[in-house]
Image (cartoon, rainbow, N blue to C red; front, top):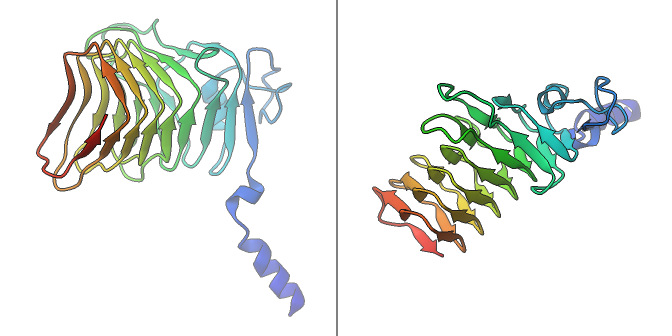
Length: 226
């Protein structure tokens, strides 16, 4: 009976107990499954593809020329910081309509500078998926994208710097996130969306040098203080 109890306890351990960390770097050996800086992958997508639910993917300093990066469900993607960890999609042609980062359910992202191609209607920066939302999008910088951050159901978008995009943060119908401590500059629209009957909390954001700071439709219960 004791052996059975031990086995049952093992089966019900949280996923985090078995989680791995995968690394991406400009100086690693690109050796799968990229579980140290020495064996780090040479692209962000490779490191993500090696990760499973509950894993962390750490990205070292450098410029990564990638786009349409598809995240894996349940991973945490952490960059070395917006000053040194850059996802550069400025090379993408004008007639490409994609996201630089496609989020996945229960995933998270922080610590990157995402650069689009600057063309109207072309690249969006970070997009929250349909269905189960991302956990958070925070501490990133997004520039030169059509829509910087497209939020469907992600509960937290915070501490991001957004500059020179058409739309800073777009919030979809029935979305109820906390939009907090973001700085949005040089955009046509700061925060845009439509909500009924649910509503977001839009607090402590700095929005300036835009045509319209906040454009919200179909809502009578919005909580906003910026």
